[in-house]
Image 1 (cartoon, rainbow, N blue to C red):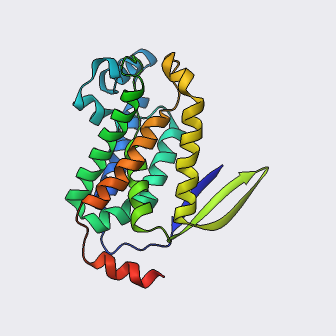
Image 2 (cartoon, helix red, strand yellow; image 1 turned 30 degrees about the horizontal axis):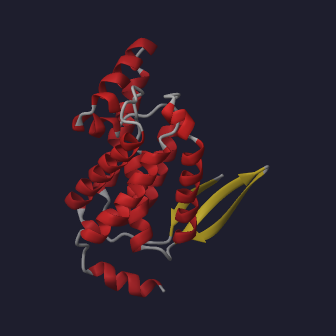
Length: 222
């Protein structure tokens, strides 16, 4: 298992949208903790994305719900590491639109696999995978300080393209293995949302105009 800790790509602007997204996710999760189990279940069904009763608003609200501390923390770590640089090159407003569009694309990818599902989909992972896809396009040679564990903890640096290829490859393998669970509505991780969000991020960042200074900063890296 690998977990990124820090990247070498510096931002020249304050990531206020990334910070705001993290704050909203944490606030919503803390609110969830105040609910009893029955109310939590109702809350998730009210604001999670349920393919069988498709609405665009539920896709957006589902991006701010999480199933537990590890789900929340892992998502927010990835968002903080990769999000500030994408916000830097897009600008605050365009970055927020980009994030939400990636979240919608991710949900649609999972919907395409099983549109009749009655299981709520929650979490920011799809949108964050979109951010990661954009990072792969814009900063493939950035160095990522990564921690891994196999019996013992160890840390090392990897080029961004290697680490991100590892993560999206893992989603493909896990997604294939989860097809039976998806079709029988057993729940689990929405791997196809991760894949859809990742490639949506790659496409959107290529279509959106980034700030001119990005080209200068990229040339200085390598």
